[in-house]
Image (cartoon, rainbow, N blue to C red; front, top):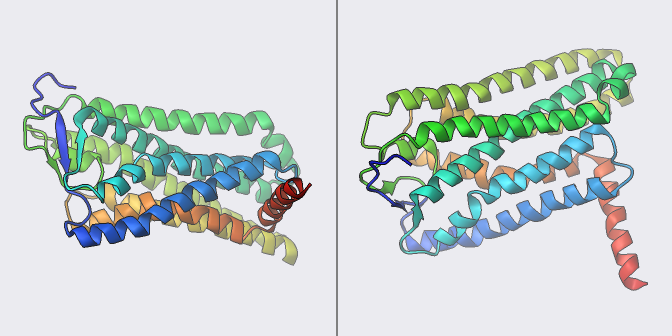
Amino acid sequence: MASTNNVTELIIVGLFQDPEVQRACFVMFLPVYLATVVGNGLIVLTVNVSKSLRSPMYFFLSYLSLVEITYSSTVVPKFITDLLAKIKTISLEGCVAQIFFFHFFGVTEIFLLTVMAYDRFVAICKPLRYTTIMSQFVCRLLVAVSWLGGIIHSMVQILVTVQLPFCGPNVIDHYFCDLHPLFKLACTDTSVEGVIVLANSGLISVFSFLILVSSYIVILYNLRNHSAEGRRKALSTCASHITVVLLFFGPAIFLYMRPSSTFTEDKLVAVFYTVVTPMLNPIIYTLRNAEVKNAMRKLWEKKVNSEVG
């Protein structure tokens, strides 16, 4: 960190100040986080164990679920424990580490969602060449590029942040560490850093979202040439993807494509995409996908039979 730092520990304001409201939030958000870990973990396990889920779509889905667990875990466990704490603190180094992993997993998810849209595009628009284009090597390469993209993005964010001097105050007006709230504590002008964050986070979100929307428009257009049953199955799969994309990109674009603020609604929007959305993804993908539900049912029946035997 910059050599002029006098601040070594930060005090986190949190989501609400009322102790009763905080306890109510603890009771509400703890089951949500547990459901996130269990639900996404079950998808990872099911895809890796079930022989019927060997297509590229499920390969990408398992990695998306893994990223959802890690993404949520960078923020939610501390957020939940802080709800029971009178004074919420985090070291400056811990704050920077949280920012790094939060953006790393968040942008990796953006790239994975884009890859999943490309997979559906190839499957629907180029069905005869699908297995050739989406080979096992290509699928692994696309996942690796997604992780690499997340790392590069986060490294840029952190290189911008560690150059800033922090000499007081030390109260961060949020319930976790993110760039805009931390920039407000720097004892120097951060307008240039704000533009870099806007370009790095905001533009990645917007361009990826536009690519995704364009892909699904082309997919829907090409579905005219498919049979009624083919259209139904494709629309069911695409509807799940589009729902997850909207849930993830909407809040991200809202927060990172405008000037920083400390409005309460910003914190509530952040709760949605850090706590709620990761829990909804496995529900969205399993409820609308018969193959995943059947694979989970067989996995459960196999477990029950082994215990009985």
